[in-house]
Image 1: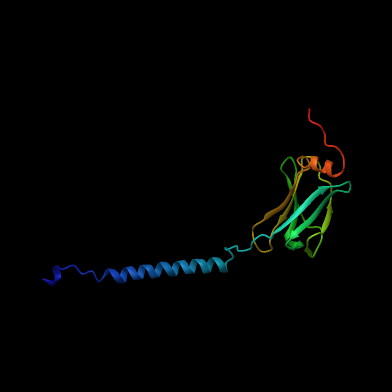
Image 2: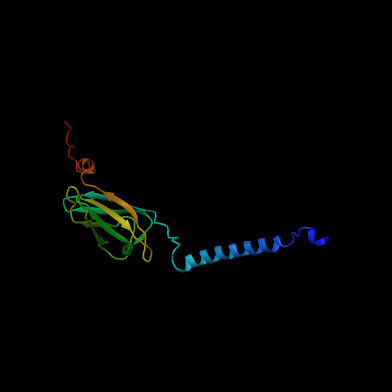
Length: 151
């Protein structure tokens, strides 16, 4: 008669083994991702830049508050035909609040961006964007000229 009574004791070891295998697989996945560099925990710096056009070219000023290694900064110029040229930051060392660089003038139709690209990681973050056509009115006001009137 004992063989007709269902035995439920066999379920608990199977369930426990399944949970243990799932936990081990999850831990190995997280550790493997960290070891092989798939986890990117590098936060972008809290840094901003001011870009303005002058008679000498385009002046980029670091506004801070964070200092950024110059090796992690680059200047991207995107032309109207969508071709992008990338140049490394023109100076070395650390870019701190108040530091300035003068770049070649940006022709109309070309957009300039200051980009942060951390060494060893495949990511980038735009820290400043400058479009001479969009920002032309503010440049004229800064220079003391009157902006063009719209008809």
